[in-house]
Image 1 (cartoon, rainbow, N blue to C red):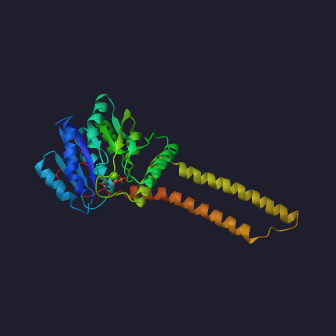
Image 2 (cartoon, rainbow, N blue to C red; image 1 turned 90 degrees about the vertical axis):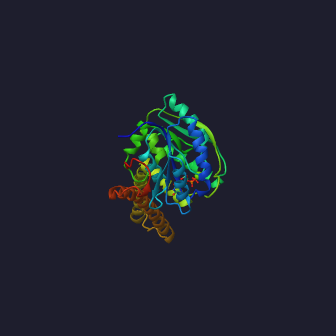
Image 3 (tube, rainbow, N blue to C red; image 1 turned 120 degrees about the horizontal axis):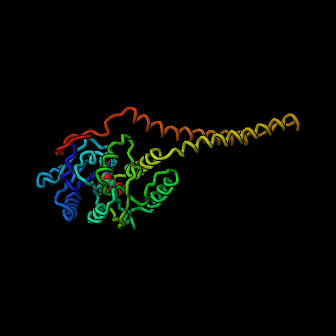
Length: 316
Ligand code: UDP
Ligand code: MG
């Protein structure tokens, strides 16, 4: 059973953050120790290509509160966080990015809200520095569209930086899906949720581990995991197109039998064929997105493979 003598566990996914680890560790320790001395820092090394893991092991050899989970390869940010959650022993768990975009100094504030009786306290960005206009715009659009598409109240302008209590943690651990969208899953769980506002900094060093391709996949994970609207849209589109083509058929027959002229034209044929072809491909693509995720879940491979860890408990 989970030992809950630990007050706070901090889960930090790490992908090529070597240059920041020293400062990250220092600022996290300073901040968390203001709340409690019973804490643990769980660094999950997600197949970094730099020296992150030796830096983390170095920290672990000096400080018994530091734990590491070293993946066998890069499994992705959400999976790294999931592994950390699976090994967390705290009464509360904080999820925080390892690039210092999420200021560790906010943790006492998150914890204070938990003490007021909230089960989830997420950090909501007031401002977001050091991000490209493209990222800001796409993120803003995406979260607003997602909100419209789902009945789960997924908060806008938040990342994964948040504090969750044991009840929420256990609920999230019980969700078996392979395509994780943790901010949605945590919202879906319910309980009492609140937020604190903060200004998000730019990345301190290194570069983003989320190029556009990963961002897109993550966005699709969010949509497919929390909404059936694209599928409903596809079938409505089908009904609409059938209706339109029925009318065109009527018109063509009428014109042939009563007006005694056939409708000529390469243009109308090519336009309608291309148009319907396009809609069909998009529809198949939409269905495919859902099927590929179903496939992943049916294969049911382990979410991640741990090369080595000094965590005491390994329930995954
Ligand atoms: N990260 C990870 N695996 C990845 C990509 C990123 O563990 O494949 C970590 C990264 O080290 C950071 C956090 O996830 O702690 C957020 O990633 P990043 O800062 O690159 O994303 P952005 O803030 O640009 O969206
Ligand atoms: Mg970042």
